[in-house]
Length: 82
Image 1 (spheres, one colour):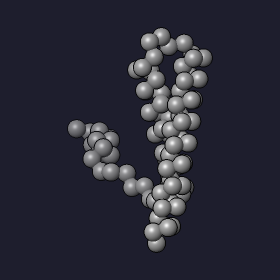
Image 2: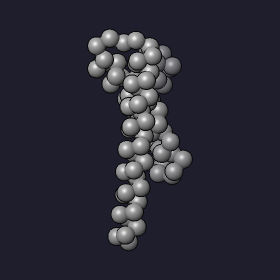
Image 3: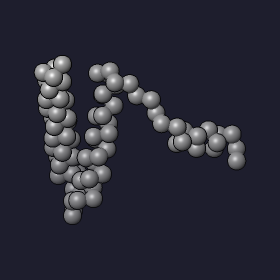
Image 4: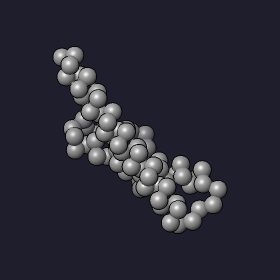
């Protein structure tokens, strides 16, 4: 194989290192957006642009709010325990 192909394939064999800083948690937003798009694309019977983007935005917002509430609850629980 060519060197470029080897380099691309090697990128899939090693995990991406993401820290645990608050800034690194922002990587969850593109993941949540892609999950919302794929989920709604598979669940909607008829995809019309306005309806699709509205449903995706609603699901993305729900995921983001749930992650935020979960993070706050876990932070408070860790604060109480320690």
